[in-house]
Amino acid sequence: GYGTELKETIRLLHNGNCRSILGNHDLWWLEMNGTGSSGPADRYLRTLPVVVERDVYDQRIVMVHGSPPASLMDGIKLLDEDGELIPAMRALWQERLQDFSGDVLVVGHTHQVFAERLGKVLVVNPGSTCFNHTCAILTLPECTVDFFPLGGQEPEPVWNWGLQYRR
Picture 1 (cartoon, one colour):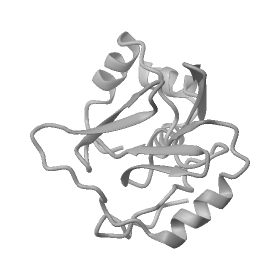
Picture 2: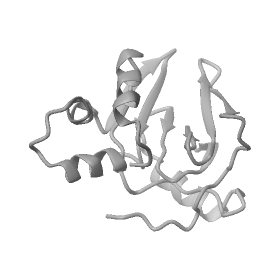
Picture 3: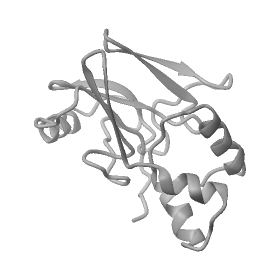
Picture 4: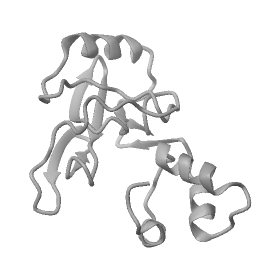
């Protein structure tokens, strides 16, 4: 939805055997192109799951785009526009994740960069490569997260904080 290199990106993801999940822009692309499309982008995007779960070093890793169980639009916002933790949002999500069955939850959608332990769950949002200029590496079994800047850009902990998401 943001770039012009969809075919090249999909080829890299496919050839690199990258595990990917469906996001809101993937869904919008599929909706805009209808059910009649049968090109490589359409075929690839239609195979993407909305949730990926893996057990690694006795840790249950769950990846969703927005928030569990499988939301593409209800993202986890923990930071204010300055990148500071909002205690009320932290408490809200800690409560909502109280019965979550994973050890690590990897999310996206909100363009916020954080790794925050909410109760028993480590919640990681690596940010956006395009807007936050970040990626994250989760090291297991230590369960540590390191964030890295991309493309020589200064990382943005929060991008477009007030964005209203389409439904």
